Picture: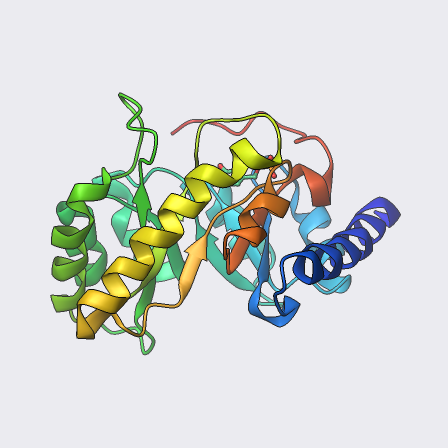
Length: 236
Ligand SMILES: *Cc1c(COP(=O)(O)O)cnc(C)c1O
């Protein structure tokens, strides 16, 4: 568990370094610890080392940890594909969903959020490389989905999320992040109701320097904090 505390210290040092290199203030970047495939005791260690938000991909696995860690009550972010029949538990147990890419899912999340004091924070996942069979909306479809989400009573649209296909080298890694940052900027500057969008969820353990350079406000770091995943996360 010492490793986890050391890794987190190291991440904070790097966050400062990357932010300075990119002329940004590190306070504008939140580190989301991606804990899929990691046991609850590891999350607890991360919490004691200063992590406040965890990202989970698989509902069943997440619910077990949410129950185990109910005393500390961190902020839970859902970052896996959302199946329509899982929207109830996701809406009730998480504060954020990063991976909304369909109107039907958004509608159901809002319905099931009814009665919870805080709206559910939402990012639209963008399929920036137009990969077949991959989650996310194509850039041209963002506006429609964003309009729908804004009309739903229990959701709060926060911004965009991307999981680009892997690239090699800083310059290549930056490209998809830059395009997503531009898409958010277009939404914000063209349409008054989107002016307040404030979130770019982008960057993982191996490309988060590039994501910060292009304006990421949430970086999603798993193995860089916890080391290799212990269990191969169960697909549901
Ligand atoms: C697993 C996962 C991450 C974290 O990946 P690492 O390479 O372990 O940092 C980030 N985002 C999403 C959507 C993931 O599924």
